[in-house]
Image 1: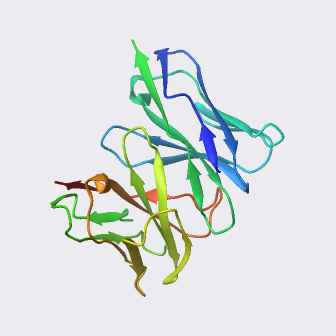
Image 2: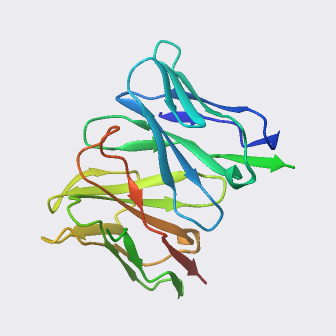
Length: 110
Length: 115
């Protein structure tokens, strides 16, 4: 079956750096996406990796290793507003069938 | 540009009833996907429509169905509701077929409670 594994919860301190890992086992792979969802809100797109390597967008970076079926989201200079759930999702094919991880709740302490 | 609009926001139904949820995508977006979200389960893919055609369907029973209209608006129907159908149902639209240049844009969802 298809599966994505990510930690259920991560705690970090304001101003610090945190890494959220995602490992996947899927029958197809086009790319790995990351979404952020605040409590009561809609998921919002953060980043997408189709090729190996690091993609940087401001304070957020995302990494992919296709050979290891592994990726991570790196959040720097954490702010209280970054407290949210973060989901990784795999594009399995060209028709946008996404398989999602169960989400990682990021708790930020002052 | 207006975002993805889902109606209603909240719905309470009784077991055995049926329900229809509506989604209006961002103008110009032709792909609409539906997801079920329950606590601790992430997002479960229901189906995806592109130009009125269902291109993909997730692993849900036939009680879950959907359609897309010529203006890209989409509806999702659940018949013979069960208690386990209680969830947040999210609709997402995108311009193309996926990838970095066409990420999903989600609505705020319809929270369905089945009693």
